[in-house]
Length: 300
Image 1 (cartoon, rainbow, N blue to C red):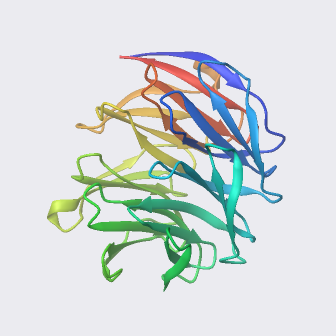
Image 2: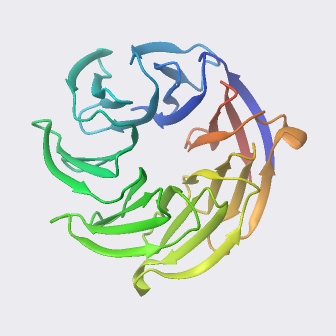
């Protein structure tokens, strides 16, 4: 496996916390501590378009392809919804005064992870709160929807993973999974596994079909793991860490394949916060506290 740095996008004035795809194969949105939401095009390096100013920091974005809208989680201010066709804010909702750490969309429902330990379930057509689920005494940091849509997993800052039924939103199981905050939860594309990690820097793998029995416990990074994402062909997954590195793993064997860091590949200088593995020429996008977005060519 060969890694080559393709581009660096430098449009943000503060830490970049999140990157999500747009409606095209080669575009994506980013947001961070400066409150700017910028659209980028992998075919036009470093020519970003400012599409929204949140006014406060943004930890979470979520693109809804069914109506070409971008959900923007404004910390302590609620939600803005951007009409990405006309590039204008079409709806706002003051749903919370807490930080918004994650937004995931499944069908006509939006699941929102809040800093006060609550999951909000919103009905997208009416933009109304359908359910208010108090899960933890600390922050909810990450949500993952099972590929079949039947359940969803939630990671919190009390070291736990909670598994919920997607229909009635009933708690099915709680895993006392990690020794510190769970920053990221991710189902494998085939739904066989749930991958989790966080501040303890351990990558844990859970067998979904066997009542979420743990099958792997890997000391994967030196410091906290912020995000996990799969490659478009599902053969690999990548982890992003506070130790400034990105690691690529085999999705079947869970063996380490490659390390992307500053020494080897002129990688990020500070914490790597989020990843987006695109189908456009198999390019991997990463964002960091160093205010930069880097684009990597992954040649298998």
